[in-house]
Length: 370
Image (cartoon, rainbow, N blue to C red; front, top):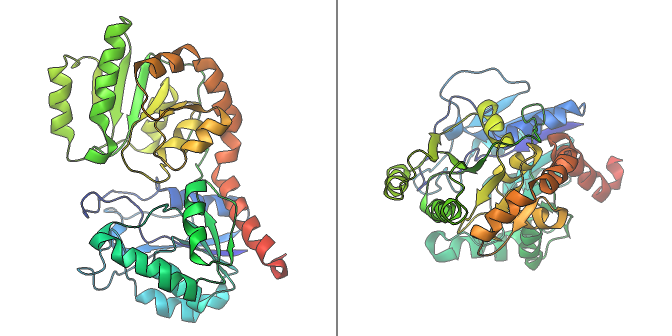
Protein backbone atom coordinates (compact mmCIF):
# COMPACT_ATOMS: atom_id res chain seq x y z
CA UNK A 1 0.00 0.00 0.00
CA UNK A 2 1.23 3.54 -0.82
CA UNK A 3 0.65 5.72 2.25
CA UNK A 4 0.79 9.52 2.56
CA UNK A 5 1.08 10.94 6.10
CA UNK A 6 0.08 14.60 6.44
CA UNK A 7 1.14 16.06 9.79
CA UNK A 8 2.13 19.73 9.45
CA UNK A 9 2.90 20.31 13.15
CA UNK A 10 5.81 18.14 14.29
CA UNK A 11 6.38 19.68 17.73
CA UNK A 12 4.27 21.43 20.35
CA UNK A 13 5.00 25.16 20.41
CA UNK A 14 5.16 27.28 23.56
CA UNK A 15 3.41 30.66 23.19
CA UNK A 16 3.44 30.14 19.41
CA UNK A 17 7.23 29.80 19.37
CA UNK A 18 8.16 26.68 17.40
CA UNK A 19 11.18 24.91 18.93
CA UNK A 20 14.13 24.21 16.67
CA UNK A 21 15.81 20.81 16.67
CA UNK A 22 18.63 19.32 14.68
CA UNK A 23 16.56 16.27 13.71
CA UNK A 24 12.94 15.23 13.30
CA UNK A 25 13.76 11.56 13.81
CA UNK A 26 12.47 11.57 17.39
CA UNK A 27 9.05 12.86 16.27
CA UNK A 28 6.14 10.52 16.83
CA UNK A 29 4.87 10.90 13.26
CA UNK A 30 8.26 10.22 11.66
CA UNK A 31 8.55 7.00 13.63
CA UNK A 32 4.99 6.06 12.68
CA UNK A 33 6.15 6.32 9.08
CA UNK A 34 8.86 3.80 9.91
CA UNK A 35 6.12 1.57 11.29
CA UNK A 36 4.32 1.61 7.93
CA UNK A 37 7.61 0.95 6.16
CA UNK A 38 8.45 -2.01 8.42
CA UNK A 39 5.08 -3.51 7.48
CA UNK A 40 6.13 -3.39 3.83
CA UNK A 41 4.29 -0.24 2.71
CA UNK A 42 5.62 2.75 0.79
CA UNK A 43 5.29 5.92 2.84
CA UNK A 44 5.74 9.68 2.40
CA UNK A 45 5.47 12.32 5.13
CA UNK A 46 4.39 15.94 4.61
CA UNK A 47 5.10 18.61 7.26
CA UNK A 48 5.21 22.41 7.43
CA UNK A 49 8.47 24.10 6.44
CA UNK A 50 8.56 25.81 9.85
CA UNK A 51 9.45 22.44 11.42
CA UNK A 52 12.36 21.60 9.11
CA UNK A 53 15.36 20.59 11.26
CA UNK A 54 18.34 22.91 11.62
CA UNK A 55 20.75 20.34 10.20
CA UNK A 56 20.64 18.46 6.91
CA UNK A 57 19.70 14.82 7.45
CA UNK A 58 18.81 11.79 5.37
CA UNK A 59 15.52 9.96 5.92
CA UNK A 60 14.49 6.35 5.56
CA UNK A 61 11.57 7.45 3.38
CA UNK A 62 10.55 10.69 1.58
CA UNK A 63 9.80 13.69 3.81
CA UNK A 64 8.40 16.82 2.13
CA UNK A 65 8.26 20.25 3.77
CA UNK A 66 5.67 22.75 2.50
CA UNK A 67 5.72 26.52 3.03
CA UNK A 68 3.16 28.00 5.44
CA UNK A 69 1.16 30.80 3.79
CA UNK A 70 -0.42 33.84 5.49
CA UNK A 71 1.46 32.84 8.61
CA UNK A 72 0.61 36.00 10.55
CA UNK A 73 -3.07 35.02 10.36
CA UNK A 74 -2.86 31.23 10.27
CA UNK A 75 -0.11 30.58 12.80
CA UNK A 76 2.13 27.62 11.82
CA UNK A 77 2.16 26.58 15.47
CA UNK A 78 -1.64 26.24 15.54
CA UNK A 79 -3.28 26.12 12.11
CA UNK A 80 -0.73 26.12 9.26
CA UNK A 81 -2.06 26.90 5.78
CA UNK A 82 0.06 25.10 3.18
CA UNK A 83 -1.38 26.14 -0.17
CA UNK A 84 1.27 24.12 -1.98
CA UNK A 85 -0.46 21.02 -0.67
CA UNK A 86 -3.47 21.82 -2.87
CA UNK A 87 -1.55 21.43 -6.13
CA UNK A 88 0.40 18.48 -4.74
CA UNK A 89 -2.80 16.56 -4.00
CA UNK A 90 -4.32 17.46 -7.38
CA UNK A 91 -1.27 16.15 -9.22
CA UNK A 92 -0.34 13.19 -7.02
CA UNK A 93 -3.61 11.88 -5.57
CA UNK A 94 -3.48 8.88 -7.92
CA UNK A 95 -0.13 7.81 -6.47
CA UNK A 96 -1.49 6.98 -3.00
CA UNK A 97 -3.82 4.29 -1.69
CA UNK A 98 -4.22 5.76 1.81
CA UNK A 99 -3.87 9.30 3.15
CA UNK A 100 -3.64 9.65 6.94
CA UNK A 101 -4.11 13.30 7.90
CA UNK A 102 -3.82 14.66 11.44
CA UNK A 103 -6.77 16.48 13.01
CA UNK A 104 -10.19 17.52 11.79
CA UNK A 105 -9.45 21.16 12.60
CA UNK A 106 -6.79 21.42 9.89
CA UNK A 107 -6.56 22.94 6.43
CA UNK A 108 -4.49 19.95 5.34
CA UNK A 109 -7.22 17.51 6.34
CA UNK A 110 -9.77 19.71 4.55
CA UNK A 111 -7.70 19.65 1.34
CA UNK A 112 -7.38 15.86 1.55
CA UNK A 113 -11.11 15.46 2.23
CA UNK A 114 -11.97 17.58 -0.83
CA UNK A 115 -9.52 16.10 -3.34
CA UNK A 116 -9.12 12.53 -2.05
CA UNK A 117 -12.29 11.70 -0.05
CA UNK A 118 -12.18 7.95 -0.76
CA UNK A 119 -8.55 7.66 0.32
CA UNK A 120 -8.48 9.89 3.38
CA UNK A 121 -8.52 8.81 7.02
CA UNK A 122 -8.34 11.57 9.64
CA UNK A 123 -6.44 10.63 12.80
CA UNK A 124 -7.82 13.01 15.41
CA UNK A 125 -6.44 13.94 18.84
CA UNK A 126 -8.21 17.06 20.16
CA UNK A 127 -10.99 16.47 22.68
CA UNK A 128 -11.95 20.12 23.26
CA UNK A 129 -12.37 23.26 21.19
CA UNK A 130 -9.31 25.38 20.47
CA UNK A 131 -9.29 28.44 22.76
CA UNK A 132 -8.01 30.93 20.17
CA UNK A 133 -10.30 33.96 19.68
CA UNK A 134 -12.69 32.77 22.38
CA UNK A 135 -13.28 29.38 20.70
CA UNK A 136 -15.07 31.01 17.74
CA UNK A 137 -12.93 29.67 14.81
CA UNK A 138 -13.00 26.18 16.29
CA UNK A 139 -16.76 26.19 16.78
CA UNK A 140 -17.36 27.49 13.24
CA UNK A 141 -15.08 24.78 11.84
CA UNK A 142 -16.70 21.88 13.69
CA UNK A 143 -20.28 23.07 13.24
CA UNK A 144 -20.08 24.17 9.59
CA UNK A 145 -16.94 22.89 7.83
CA UNK A 146 -16.91 19.41 9.36
CA UNK A 147 -20.56 18.44 8.60
CA UNK A 148 -20.23 19.70 5.01
CA UNK A 149 -16.76 18.55 3.94
CA UNK A 150 -15.98 15.66 6.31
CA UNK A 151 -19.38 13.98 6.46
CA UNK A 152 -18.16 10.98 4.40
CA UNK A 153 -14.64 10.86 5.80
CA UNK A 154 -13.75 8.12 8.27
CA UNK A 155 -12.21 9.47 11.46
CA UNK A 156 -10.01 7.55 13.89
CA UNK A 157 -9.75 9.26 17.31
CA UNK A 158 -6.65 8.87 19.43
CA UNK A 159 -8.58 8.53 22.69
CA UNK A 160 -12.06 7.85 24.06
CA UNK A 161 -12.36 11.55 24.97
CA UNK A 162 -11.55 12.61 21.40
CA UNK A 163 -14.13 10.10 20.16
CA UNK A 164 -16.86 11.55 22.36
CA UNK A 165 -15.98 15.07 21.26
CA UNK A 166 -16.13 14.50 17.50
CA UNK A 167 -19.24 12.31 17.58
CA UNK A 168 -21.25 15.51 18.03
CA UNK A 169 -20.53 16.72 14.51
CA UNK A 170 -22.48 14.53 12.04
CA UNK A 171 -19.63 12.36 10.77
CA UNK A 172 -20.18 9.18 8.82
CA UNK A 173 -17.98 7.01 11.00
CA UNK A 174 -16.00 7.57 14.18
CA UNK A 175 -13.96 4.42 14.61
CA UNK A 176 -12.21 2.78 17.57
CA UNK A 177 -9.40 4.89 19.11
CA UNK A 178 -5.81 4.27 18.01
CA UNK A 179 -3.09 5.39 20.43
CA UNK A 180 0.26 6.97 19.47
CA UNK A 181 2.89 4.37 18.69
CA UNK A 182 6.52 4.10 19.83
CA UNK A 183 9.50 2.86 17.85
CA UNK A 184 10.54 -0.15 19.95
CA UNK A 185 13.96 -0.27 18.26
CA UNK A 186 14.70 3.04 20.02
CA UNK A 187 13.04 2.19 23.34
CA UNK A 188 14.34 -0.78 25.29
CA UNK A 189 12.88 -1.74 28.64
CA UNK A 190 14.36 -2.60 32.00
CA UNK A 191 12.85 -4.33 35.01
CA UNK A 192 15.76 -3.13 37.16
CA UNK A 193 15.04 0.29 38.62
CA UNK A 194 17.10 2.92 40.38
CA UNK A 195 15.69 4.92 43.26
CA UNK A 196 14.50 7.73 41.01
CA UNK A 197 11.37 9.22 39.50
CA UNK A 198 11.27 11.05 36.18
CA UNK A 199 9.35 13.95 34.64
CA UNK A 200 9.48 14.36 30.85
CA UNK A 201 7.85 17.63 29.88
CA UNK A 202 8.07 21.14 28.54
CA UNK A 203 8.95 23.43 31.43
CA UNK A 204 5.81 25.56 31.10
CA UNK A 205 3.05 26.60 33.47
CA UNK A 206 0.26 24.23 32.39
CA UNK A 207 2.49 21.20 33.03
CA UNK A 208 2.34 22.07 36.76
CA UNK A 209 5.79 20.66 37.48
CA UNK A 210 6.15 22.80 40.61
CA UNK A 211 3.39 20.74 42.26
CA UNK A 212 5.29 17.49 41.60
CA UNK A 213 8.46 18.92 43.13
CA UNK A 214 6.49 19.86 46.26
CA UNK A 215 4.91 16.39 46.50
CA UNK A 216 8.33 14.79 46.03
CA UNK A 217 9.76 16.95 48.85
CA UNK A 218 6.95 15.86 51.15
CA UNK A 219 7.50 12.22 50.14
CA UNK A 220 11.20 12.10 51.02
CA UNK A 221 10.59 14.02 54.27
CA UNK A 222 7.62 11.92 55.45
CA UNK A 223 9.26 8.57 54.77
CA UNK A 224 12.92 9.54 55.31
CA UNK A 225 13.68 8.46 51.76
CA UNK A 226 16.48 10.88 50.95
CA UNK A 227 18.10 8.36 48.63
CA UNK A 228 15.31 8.80 46.04
CA UNK A 229 16.03 11.29 43.23
CA UNK A 230 13.80 13.24 40.85
CA UNK A 231 14.93 13.75 37.24
CA UNK A 232 13.33 16.45 35.09
CA UNK A 233 13.86 16.15 31.33
CA UNK A 234 12.76 19.04 29.13
CA UNK A 235 13.19 22.70 28.38
CA UNK A 236 11.02 25.80 28.64
CA UNK A 237 10.42 29.26 30.08
CA UNK A 238 10.03 28.11 33.69
CA UNK A 239 13.51 26.62 34.04
CA UNK A 240 14.83 29.42 36.27
CA UNK A 241 11.67 29.43 38.37
CA UNK A 242 11.94 25.67 38.93
CA UNK A 243 15.62 26.01 39.82
CA UNK A 244 14.69 28.58 42.45
CA UNK A 245 12.01 26.29 43.91
CA UNK A 246 14.46 23.38 44.05
CA UNK A 247 17.02 25.49 45.92
CA UNK A 248 14.40 26.96 48.26
CA UNK A 249 13.26 23.46 49.26
CA UNK A 250 16.84 22.31 49.81
CA UNK A 251 16.66 19.77 46.99
CA UNK A 252 19.73 20.86 45.04
CA UNK A 253 21.38 17.45 45.39
CA UNK A 254 18.16 15.43 44.90
CA UNK A 255 16.43 17.01 41.88
CA UNK A 256 18.21 17.27 38.52
CA UNK A 257 17.13 19.54 35.65
CA UNK A 258 18.59 17.73 32.64
CA UNK A 259 17.27 19.78 29.73
CA UNK A 260 16.28 18.26 26.38
CA UNK A 261 17.40 14.68 25.76
CA UNK A 262 17.21 12.74 22.47
CA UNK A 263 15.50 9.35 22.51
CA UNK A 264 18.81 7.51 22.85
CA UNK A 265 19.46 9.17 26.22
CA UNK A 266 15.85 9.59 27.30
CA UNK A 267 15.13 5.87 27.04
CA UNK A 268 17.93 4.96 29.43
CA UNK A 269 16.84 7.53 32.01
CA UNK A 270 13.20 6.50 31.67
CA UNK A 271 13.77 2.73 31.77
CA UNK A 272 15.79 3.04 34.98
CA UNK A 273 13.10 5.10 36.77
CA UNK A 274 10.43 3.82 39.13
CA UNK A 275 7.71 5.94 37.54
CA UNK A 276 6.95 8.76 35.13
CA UNK A 277 5.20 11.55 37.07
CA UNK A 278 2.50 13.77 35.51
CA UNK A 279 0.25 16.36 37.14
CA UNK A 280 -0.70 18.47 34.12
CA UNK A 281 -3.46 21.09 34.03
CA UNK A 282 -4.25 20.66 30.32
CA UNK A 283 -3.13 18.05 27.77
CA UNK A 284 -4.30 15.73 25.02
CA UNK A 285 -2.54 12.42 24.30
CA UNK A 286 0.87 12.73 25.92
CA UNK A 287 3.59 11.02 23.88
CA UNK A 288 5.69 10.56 27.02
CA UNK A 289 3.09 8.12 28.40
CA UNK A 290 3.51 5.35 25.80
CA UNK A 291 7.26 6.04 25.73
CA UNK A 292 7.43 5.34 29.47
CA UNK A 293 5.26 2.23 29.25
CA UNK A 294 7.37 0.60 26.51
CA UNK A 295 10.44 1.42 28.65
CA UNK A 296 8.92 -0.76 31.38
CA UNK A 297 8.21 2.31 33.51
CA UNK A 298 4.77 2.78 35.14
CA UNK A 299 2.99 6.14 35.02
CA UNK A 300 1.60 8.09 37.96
CA UNK A 301 -0.72 10.77 36.61
CA UNK A 302 -3.86 12.75 37.24
CA UNK A 303 -6.87 12.18 35.00
CA UNK A 304 -6.19 15.11 32.62
CA UNK A 305 -4.22 13.41 29.78
CA UNK A 306 -6.65 11.89 27.31
CA UNK A 307 -4.64 8.66 27.25
CA UNK A 308 -4.83 8.29 31.05
CA UNK A 309 -7.72 5.75 30.76
CA UNK A 310 -5.32 3.38 28.96
CA UNK A 311 -3.13 3.37 32.08
CA UNK A 312 -6.04 2.66 34.41
CA UNK A 313 -7.65 0.00 32.22
CA UNK A 314 -4.45 -2.00 31.72
CA UNK A 315 -2.81 -1.59 35.13
CA UNK A 316 0.12 0.42 33.75
CA UNK A 317 0.40 2.66 36.77
CA UNK A 318 -1.92 4.88 38.83
CA UNK A 319 -4.46 7.47 37.69
CA UNK A 320 -5.66 9.68 40.55
CA UNK A 321 -7.26 13.10 40.22
CA UNK A 322 -5.33 14.66 43.10
CA UNK A 323 -2.42 12.32 43.66
CA UNK A 324 0.17 12.94 46.31
CA UNK A 325 2.56 11.33 48.75
CA UNK A 326 0.48 8.19 49.33
CA UNK A 327 0.33 7.46 45.59
CA UNK A 328 4.10 7.88 45.29
CA UNK A 329 4.52 5.40 48.12
CA UNK A 330 2.02 3.01 46.52
CA UNK A 331 3.77 2.99 43.15
CA UNK A 332 7.09 2.32 44.88
CA UNK A 333 5.73 -0.55 46.97
CA UNK A 334 3.92 -2.21 44.03
CA UNK A 335 6.46 -1.33 41.37
CA UNK A 336 7.20 -4.90 40.29
CA UNK A 337 3.53 -5.48 39.49
CA UNK A 338 3.21 -2.33 37.38
CA UNK A 339 6.53 -2.90 35.60
CA UNK A 340 5.41 -6.39 34.60
CA UNK A 341 2.16 -4.99 33.19
CA UNK A 342 4.08 -2.38 31.18
CA UNK A 343 6.42 -4.95 29.67
CA UNK A 344 3.47 -7.16 28.71
CA UNK A 345 1.78 -4.18 27.00
CA UNK A 346 4.82 -3.10 24.95
CA UNK A 347 3.90 -4.66 21.63
CA UNK A 348 0.43 -3.06 21.66
CA UNK A 349 2.14 0.36 21.59
CA UNK A 350 4.62 -0.28 18.78
CA UNK A 351 4.57 1.94 15.68
CA UNK A 352 3.88 -1.20 13.66
CA UNK A 353 0.79 -1.90 15.74
CA UNK A 354 -0.43 1.70 15.34
CA UNK A 355 0.19 1.62 11.58
CA UNK A 356 -1.64 -1.68 11.22
CA UNK A 357 -4.59 -0.45 13.29
CA UNK A 358 -4.92 2.60 11.03
CA UNK A 359 -4.77 0.41 7.92
CA UNK A 360 -7.35 -1.97 9.38
CA UNK A 361 -9.66 0.95 10.15
CA UNK A 362 -9.40 2.19 6.57
CA UNK A 363 -9.81 -1.21 4.93
CA UNK A 364 -12.69 -2.29 7.15
CA UNK A 365 -14.58 0.89 6.29
CA UNK A 366 -13.68 0.63 2.59
CA UNK A 367 -14.41 -2.98 1.56
CA UNK A 368 -13.16 -2.35 -1.99
CA UNK A 369 -9.66 -1.91 -0.53
CA UNK A 370 -9.55 -5.46 0.85
